[in-house]
Length: 109
Image 1: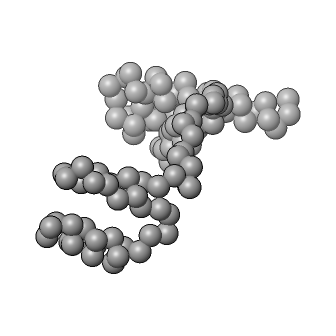
Image 2: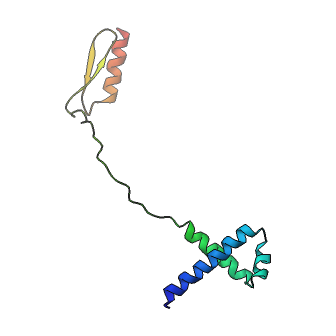
Image 3: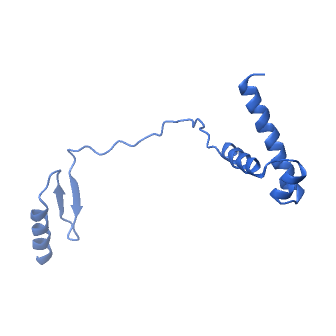
């Protein structure tokens, strides 16, 4: 028997002990005493097997194409409609101070 098989056999043996203990209603120390096991080894295997049991696994997530809407052309201006029916066309790279000034002026009309 090679080392890998021995380790697998040990893991199985300890997993069986831990499963038996959890259903026995005995404390860990009592179970170990009744089964001639070292309590420290029992604790070691209980923690080691819990890590293996809760070891995160990677799963493949299928991908799919999501249709996207085409963004408006950068050359199309934004149109700001005013209550009076007038509108202001705002192009990319506009000056915010100038726009504020125009809106204030139109409000005062």
